[in-house]
Image 1 (cartoon, rainbow over the protein chains, first blue to last red):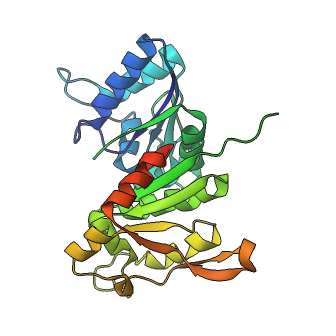
Image 2: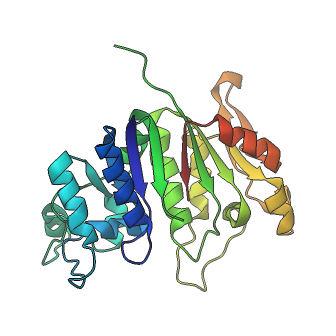
Length: 130
Length: 137
């Protein structure tokens, strides 16, 4: 089956990033396809490479990046939600005159149309959040 | 070349318009999604019914009043806004407390028609069961 995932809450504050990651990993190991994972609301905070949790805790952001590297999963951060919350890739940082960019490897920034397209293309869109 | 896929999309809004970001970012999603020529509707339940309250005034809060943007939905052919009757009644609201949102029916000489449809929870439950994609805000 072809799944798309939406992650609606921020990492560490809320379990949804963990649950979504476990779901994605289990789906891939079960031979299913992940068409895309879309990060919205505070979920965009899953995409900052400046995240530095204590060493004895899981690294939620790196875990996503590894999933993208190993399985080619398309990780998309909503541009409007990301800009509000200070998540920027190099192009966005330059455009807004910011002195740094923080998008993690394997993620890309794009529009809400990517979420709608995921709903159209996937067999199931599964939302993780409240 | 096959026919383009048309799925039934429902945007479910169940939170108050202010206090959290879900409502305004949900409306943004519905407005963007309207460009994809899918079979789209919205549902308003629980505190989500407050999103459609008329005469919203946020001037004392420093937060933008985004309620005028709901009027754009009709222009994008999002013409079915289902409001749960039980949620309205539990909050002491009636249809008259809601914004008079409309859309123009091109199959009926562009007649202006109301977008808001009051439904009970059983009808809403049946509508939810029909959907292909549900986005929850």
